[in-house]
Image 1 (tube, one colour):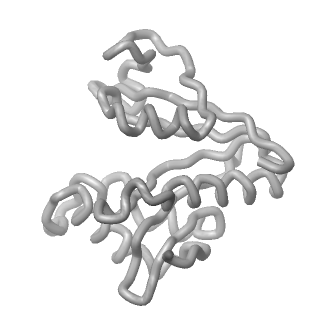
Image 2 (tube, rainbow, N blue to C red):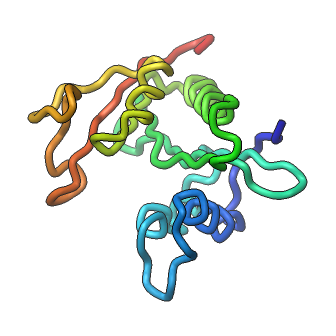
Image 3 (cartoon, rainbow, N blue to C red):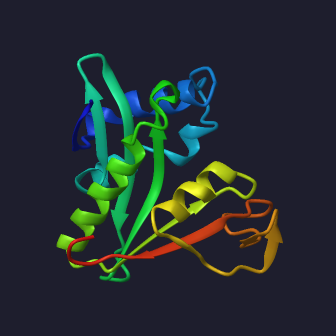
Length: 168
């Protein structure tokens, strides 16, 4: 089983390459696209201490980019999670989320939020299985409440919220 550690700024290139490979895309050309747009270096420059990497001797197997809100001392946010497709279903994402919950609770956070694309049934089911509730939005897609234009025009999202605390 891969070992888990805090992320480092030096992980950036490997995480973006993994995200592209695991999504079935070729590495990004000179301009950003796909995972490159949502995994800019700044997340590791400023939130490496709240992000996690699971790796073994062959490299990165999974990672979680998370942060503690600067505007609300009780909120943490999971921004992006990637798991090697060969290892999905083996508890890596669950382990990353659980470690993130524990660390966020130790830092005084009481709530974790996350989002997923509508229609991504696997992500919705995973978040629900991890104890997240769906935050009511302004639209419904495939029976799930959605926030239209959450991340910009045409960028609808399912928003999740989970309470955490001691022993989470």
